[in-house]
Picture (cartoon, rainbow, N blue to C red):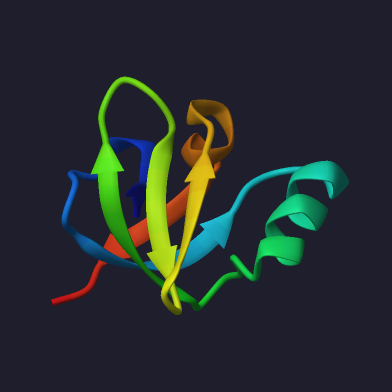
Length: 74
């Protein structure tokens, strides 16, 4: 498992674990970003990580994206 913030653009990933307190967990839950969900990384450059889930795009800051541990899905 590696942090979402370290994955390359264009990769499909599955969320394996989220490390964070109540605030982080609540924020991600409101967006539907939960353990076990699949995401596609649209862009991961020097700014926020932009992911796609169910045809919705989300911009995640570097800090929060570093707390989301993922595995690549083929």
